[in-house]
Amino acid sequence: MHLYEVLRRPLITEKNTAIQAPQGKYAFKVGAEANKEQIKQAVEKAFNVGVIQVNVMTVPGKERRLRGRWVMSPSWKKAIVTLKPGDKIELFGGV
Amino acid sequence: MKVTREKTENSQAFLRIEMEPAEVEESLEQSYQRLAKKANIPGFRKGKAPRVVLERYIGKDSLLEDALNNLLPQAYEKALKEQEIEAIANPSIEIAQTDPVVFKATVPLKPTIELGDYQQIRLAPEPVELTEDEVNTVIEQLRRQHATWEPVERPADFDDLVALDIESHIEEKPFINQQGVQYQILHDQPLPVPGFAEQLSGMKGGEEKEFKLKLPEDYSRAELAGKEARFKVRVSEIKQQRLPELDDEFASLVNPDLKTLDSLRERISANLRLMAEEKAKREFEERVVEAVVDSSQVEFPPVLVEMEIARLFDQQARQLQTSNIGLEEYLGRVGKTEEELREELRPLAIKRVTSSLVLGRTAEEEKIEVSDAEINAELENMVQSVTGNKDEVKKRLDSPQARDSIGQLLATRKTIQRLVEIAGGSTNARKK
Image (cartoon, rainbow over all chains, first blue to last red; front, side):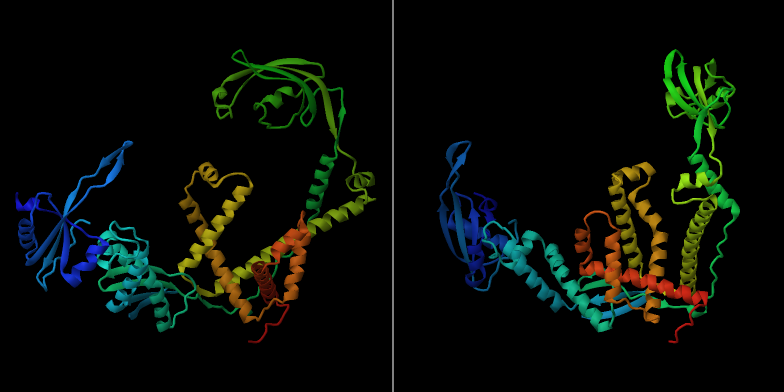
């Protein structure tokens, strides 16, 4: 899996912005097949920072109504990356 | 905040106001607080988005714009205080640059009015002259109004009234077909067709006649213009106008109160004189005011003219409304755009602004005041002259604003009165 396919987009939400500066943790939506090692490399390369920990979780899809039927929205993978103390990412990518 | 006054002209002050970054920052923060409460940003509850996120979402510029909108009026107020300027209307504010924030304000100032030496203006009213001819003209008109028509047995002549049956065709199509029309034969009568009246003169009662007439090129019905019409007319009756004799009987016919012709004459000349005097007085007042205005130096900001134009325009629009013509329709009819109409009002507006400023100043100079009692009297007067629901009118007029404007009206009237007295030399000018 290519590194460019690992990081999909940063997650900018109320909860995530709250832990960015104080704890140095940044959340991303990542490719479903990406593993922690790949995520670490991708973040280090893309933002030129040091990564000390990566936590991943799969966010289950939700039931949504589509044309009168109940369908599942796809599950996706979320990664919370802890940076080295002092490192920062300017997350001004597409909100 | 740094305020510099660049120049003053036309009673307008041009201010350049430079804001300190800290002041702008404070205002930005306030704007953020306020906007964040309203902004609906995905991933955030209302009011919870941090400033960077909000800036990304609504754009830095719009945040700045909001901040400036709040900041400018305050800054403007402060600048006015600092410069000790008294503005009379809203300024026009233009943002020159945003980093640091610099804006330019054009402040309309109080007009400067230099009254001329109006105490020295001497004008004489036009003397009112009434000639015998004018009275005679009126009497002649009255005679015509009260004329009677009598049938006569002779060929029709001009000024006669004839009863007609008309049958006419244009190219085999019926044109005018009427029975028993009353028609007065007058010189140069363009109806129904030029030349028609001339054809009728000389006809006898009961006579029939056929003739052809060409319709004029500019006939109102375009499809018939320039065509030839065949007329067939039958005169059934000829009546002659009989003017009443100028005698006492005529006088009482005009007005039952009047017994003799002389008293009628008197009444007419008195009325004419009254009208002429009224007109002369108005003209004299106008001339006096004009002279006073001409002798004064007035400088005022252009906003006043704009405001006056807007007022005149509204007035006209309302008038049109009451006459059941929409503004749009009127504009279409006279073939003008709204802009052109406004432009046309400009000279009038300038004149009105100048004279009202001069008069206002004169009133101050002459210490003209209007008492409550006078306003009440005028109010009563106005109510009396209104037909319809007097109570309602009174209620509407008894508001503070209405009273105010009545007061102003009276003050203007009194000022003009005073000026007329001065100019006529009948009052010694009051010493300042």
